[in-house]
Image 1 (cartoon, rainbow, N blue to C red):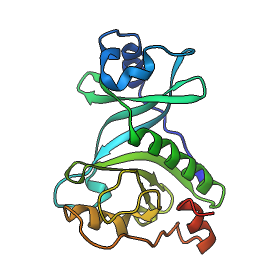
Image 2: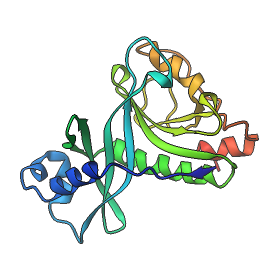
Image 3: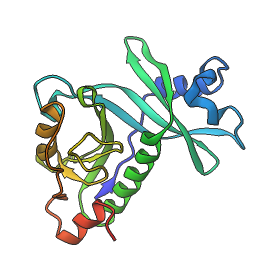
Length: 206
């Protein structure tokens, strides 16, 4: 698997850079770590943000709403910045911090590990489920068709879903679409038909 870093539209990057230079934007509570950086703040790892809501538990129903950038202070990720798409380009929405930030970094590391063990292309995206207050790293496989896409739920995950396990999207989507979950966790990670050892890698097992 080759992890293909997406190229955001220029207006998305401009919106983030403007926010990093705005005293008003940096007053947001989630931007606390950005107010006294040790070096230049650099937007990195842009991820297209998609939202899936409503009765259709299909990736084709997900709509792209904008982009999220991880903001690096030196080698550390200090926050994330999200921009939303409008008719005239992108505008800054908000900064984020907290557990989803660290979980995104961990999921991206898992995706890079997977890239060493498979021979397909993969595009990382973010997929959010407003009804479940859940987000997953979506590994889109343009070569393998919809059935080859994977989802890595970020922590904290909804009850019944195990974070940081790679699941086929077709398996996880119906679970998340059913609303509040009160059932056994999904424990069977499958990686594009890879052998069990690769599956254990995706779940972070050693």
